[in-house]
Amino acid sequence: MEPWDTLIRTELEPMVPYAPGLRGSEVRERCGRELICKLSSNEHPAGPFPSAIRAVEAVLPQLNRYPDGSCRALRRALSERLDFPFDNVVVGSGSNEILRLIAQALLRPGDEAVFAWPSFIVYPMVTQMFGATAVRVPLKEGEIHDLEAILAAITDKTRIVFLCNPNNPTGTIYHRDEFERFLERVPAHVLVVADEAYFEFVTEPDYPDTLRYLDLERPLVALRTFSKIYSLAGLRVGYGVMPTPLARAIDKIREPFNVNTVAQVAAYYSLDDDAEVRRRRAENQEQKTYLYSCFDRLGLTYIPSQTNFVYLKTERAVEMFEALLGEGIIARDFGTAPALRLGVGTPEDTRATIEAFEVVAAKLGTL
Ligand SMILES: Cc1ncc(COP(=O)(O)O)c(C=O)c1O
Image (cartoon, rainbow, N blue to C red; front, top):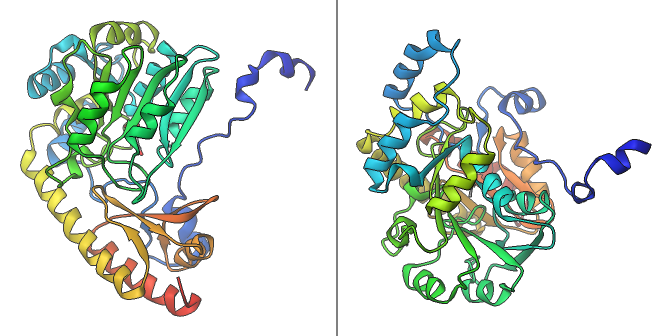
């Protein structure tokens, strides 16, 4: 091991690799069931939009060429749609990549990044990998962001505040008035990154759309993704709207062709089908009501969600996770937190999930 001790940066030592949810094929082998409901990664259960699939098929013969390194067509379409200048729209290999690039552009050893906890696991990862310190602020009652406590946690060393709205894994949101109070008081030396990966699923009217607060002067960024309601998780494409200096910095450090051709084309051809987005949002909402009534019946504690997943609070998370796996349902457990996160699937997935919960409740007793 000798040379590695000095070769590899010491900041990486306490980090652990990202652990993806189990795959359907692994679970099929384990439990021997045909129908497996993969509800562990907050993906959309349906395939990509038909227009995206057609566009992907058409572009395949051109894959001998590098992608458009500037994602021009997609950025132009996003710029028109969102009504922000082209230069302020940044596209990445998933919004995950943009989170990392922002951290890389801003964080130096000794800096701090503040975020709620539990929240998206990538915030501590991108903070630690650049030698900065992750400052976790517990969610308040109701598993909601405590924006006051986040303000109180900001110091002279803070460079970034990550806000996850809606929050993964709890599915909760902070409201417009809280966000406005937060923005009035957040110090000017801090970049606020509002991660809105589940934006399109939200139905609560009091949800603050960060783009409405973005004047491209103050250090504020909104991030969104094509991985969730648009069903393009397998292609890796997300975007952010941000002030020019940050967009320029990211342009310098990203890989030259960071978003592949297929991803660019699929995202571009997904953008016009607003009717399908509305249909998916309504269906997701309907499936959640069936799940909630099952959880109510079984006496399970859950947090009403603004997303395509539901957070269940249970001291028996590990046993429940294993028992659900045996029934072909892949949920997400968190090792340390007494909770499970369960994605919302198709109507067929919902029926199978409800049946599985009933079997598990009969097996385990009090959940
Ligand atoms: C809150 C949040 N932000 C960002 C992402 C990353 O999305 P992408 O697939 O665009 O990298 C996820 C994915 O699960 C997420 O939950």
